[in-house]
Amino acid sequence: MSEARTERRPRAALRLPPFGRLRRRIGDLVTAYLFVLPAAAVLFTFQYLPAIDIFRISLTNRLLLRPRWGYVGLDNYERLLNDGRFWNSVWNTFLFVVGSVPLQIALALALAIALAGPLRRAGFFRTVFFLPVAASLVGVSVIWEWIYHPRLGVLNELLGMIGVQGPNWLASSTWAMPSIILLVVWTGTGYYMVIYLAGVLDISKEYYEAAVLDGASRWQQFVHVTWPLLTPVTYLVIVLQVINSFQVFTTVYVMTGGGPARATEVLVYYLYQRAFESLEFGYASAIAVVLFLFLAVLTVIIRVGYGRTVTYDR
Image (cartoon, rainbow, N blue to C red; front, side, top):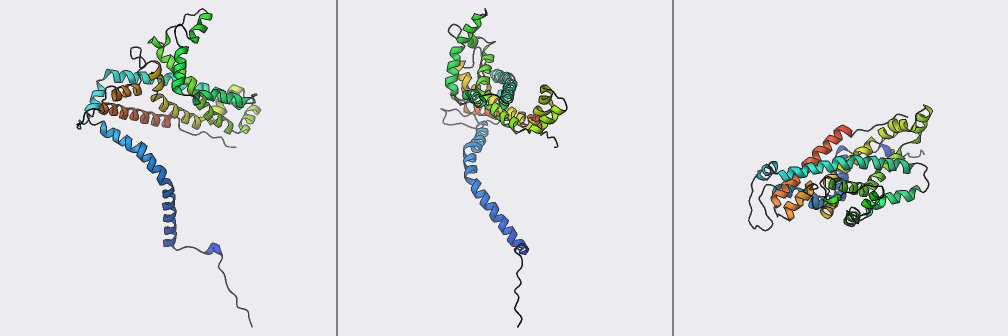
């Protein structure tokens, strides 16, 4: 008797019909979206929906204490074009961005490169430079307000030791904005240092070894190896800094209140005054929409001009 042979098809040869594959793919997509749905719902409810509502309110003459209000179209935006305080706040904001962003990039990158090397107690110094980021910005602003005090401040005391008469920093139209920039640089550099530090440590040492064999100096290694390979990190840092700089508010509110003579009245502080002091919610919403457009345009410009990735073939 011959034994019956049972042929078994290999498992790899089993294939679902086209309808079965489609149903399985749809099931995977549904499962994935169900996992994302809670976070998406929270994001839409607390971020996207208020943003849409702000645009709607910007088309109205809404006041906080006015029970009735109506749509005025683009009147608020037309009013912005003729608002001298608005353009003054835009100019002050751009001055703040130009003064703080390059300085923070330079300091954060220098600290990251120094702490990525064979430095003794590098972990201790990383913690020290990052501590201002974790501190309360209101408390730090109050402390620095005393540091800038014309008679009792530490800064003028140090300048007096070398024969320099320090100004009244926060009461001077010339020095108020640089004083705020210095504080923001001190508090924010540690955060961007950590981002740069991750990028520097991710660069392979093979590139530096090859550069040394070619006779490259430390500066040439930085120019031709470190800086190009940090391009995506620098793009991220610039975008984050520009967004954070356009939203500066706490230090201005605590230290100067927009003064003296509106020399530090930045865009968000002017928005705050219109919304919660003048109670003009419609006009303040128009300012918020314009602020969003500024940031969107600047992000696109930075992306086009600096958002490329540099790699070297091994």
